Image 1 (cartoon, rainbow, N blue to C red):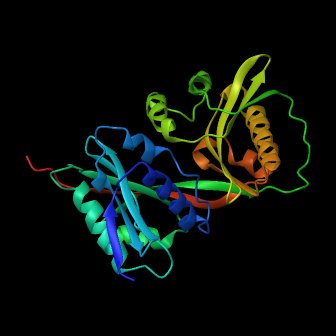
Image 2 (tube, helix red, strand yellow):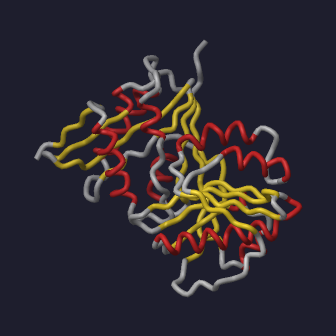
Image 3 (cartoon, rainbow, N blue to C red):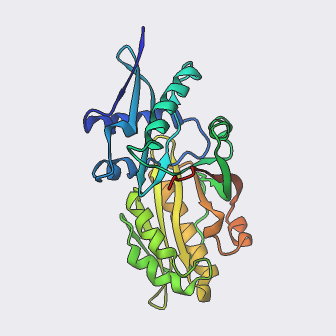
Length: 292
């Protein structure tokens, strides 16, 4: 059959996009739960149907690529395809989507994306397109066993099926892991994160630890997306929050979990809880010169 490529046509394409991304990433190591970014971008004035393309072999979706963006910054997606469709189709989708994003019609000038370090095919593809690796954040993970020990927490714990940025903000000033302007960035970033639950830790009624977790059901993978621990109670707060997260994910059927190194106050503490370095979050970027 002839492969046809079309742009975005209707809101149903968002569901198609999410379903396809889960399908093509199901076997990739430490692949995160899909974010809300495409849906949020769809409702912004910057959205254009040409920011999305879908490739079909007959009636079967075999490829997709898209981007989100604002004010010249573009989060450029990878040209995902089913096995057997690599090569020319990916090049054509990239030319279409990147070509529009970098055109005068859209005006993208800075392009970025993140991958896991084991995703060598995706990293190499972007490098061949002129992207450079601009940062690597180690990821620490562990398996979740059926016989997880019931350690004593020594802290009051609260679990909520939502994420509260105000709670994180209460802990951040007492943590050396964060800078002065980090909350402004996080407030915008977390709008796109589909948190499944959060864990609060209290010491004598004072909030000293907080974390937000997303769980990908199809791969049984839980990821600590955000966390903060007050320096005055960092060890016990970190331990209580992580152990509670492990127990909650176990109840949900999770088999693995991870947390970025920049959220861990002391690596010795995470090692005692069974975490080890398993991957890296690889940030890639490309900038175009802007004509005056």
